[in-house]
Length: 108
Image 1 (cartoon, rainbow, N blue to C red):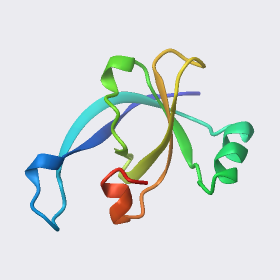
Image 2 (image 1 turned 60 degrees about the vertical axis):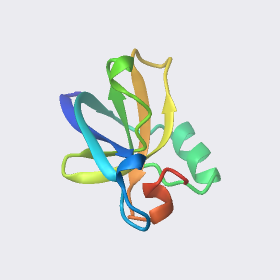
Image 3 (image 1 turned 120 degrees about the vertical axis):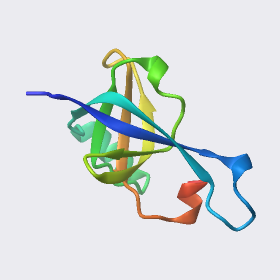
Image 4 (image 1 turned 180 degrees about the vertical axis):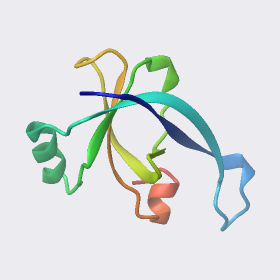
């Protein structure tokens, strides 16, 4: 049984940080539903060296603005893939965020 929950999408304001410092976060809470990572999705991701943990469905496409990080149920994640078509809305495949500076700046 699926439950409607919420997650916090995290973007960064690149013009608001000083050299060498962390960019200022822009946080927005949106509705989402957790989906399982299917076998096809899992094998495609691991073939590219990624480790998918779950997929989150954002029911309204207008709510997703290209954020590369999010928080869900107290944990921080990095978006590794965005898809649509299977469901209405946007489906995000995510993996745990490890704090790597390249990931923070969206260069991963």
